[in-house]
Length: 371
Image (tube, rainbow, N blue to C red; front, side, top):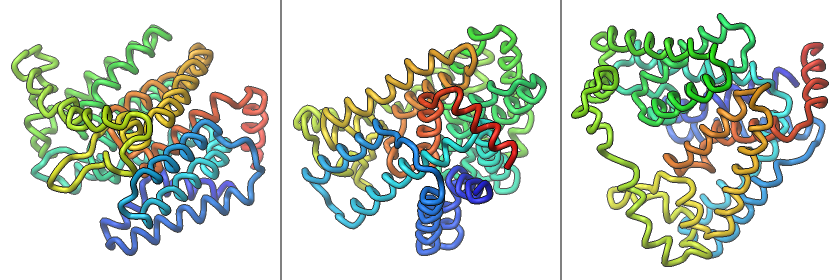
């Protein structure tokens, strides 16, 4: 069971199906994707059945039922994505319960390493690197989640090494979302424990290394100049960071939201039309725009519950509130909540770690040590 769990975690967190698709075509990618869901189901049926993540399952049913009734352009895609999302929510919860934070951190570190491999061995003129994650923003978020989990390590040297490595990989993505959330996570960590101030110094060290190797790795010069300006306080360059703002994209969909606020406009109507209109790049707007106010409130309510629950763990498990805050802010920058399996898996992992009683986790960790 442990080997199967590691295999599924690797496939999901490593975004393995997407890499197969890039390397061997859509057919092979689809087979790899279906294989990952089959393995999830196998693990679920072999494992002890425990409580499902009820808030997210209710949300999924509401979102798909309402948006599907209002409008569906491609019924086959609708049915397929609905089934896959339910599988990752329910079967993924069993894997999440059996996975401790060190194992998840290890998988995220492996995923972040693909960004470094991309930069070193597959440098490109674009100068932003995404590793296994299609786009640099998604890769940056994987690095960020790894940084959040690193604060759970008791060994200070190991914690600092993980933070330095994951921060460096995150900076290679040149994701503004990564940079902002990394700063926020560090501020919260310092409030939690002043000894975490060392992590801020690691960020400066990572920036120095990034600037030093910028020519060798063909890094994005525009994004690099913005980061350099943060150090030199050059206001002109910093203003350039506000270009291509997500808010301009969001505004394209406001009218549609207000036209149908209760039941939305239908499935994937906010996901973008190729060469005509970009996707909304905001999970909250996509949910209310496609399925209306009820699924929207359910989704928001689930995260608010997690946020309040995480603050009860603030002293003992700082990585949990860091994860919840990061995941909530992430939803402002992406609209692929139902197709990014690695993000869904981490959301469910965070949820079950917040609702599972401490004594159950202690018993689980003891059991895992004897496996």
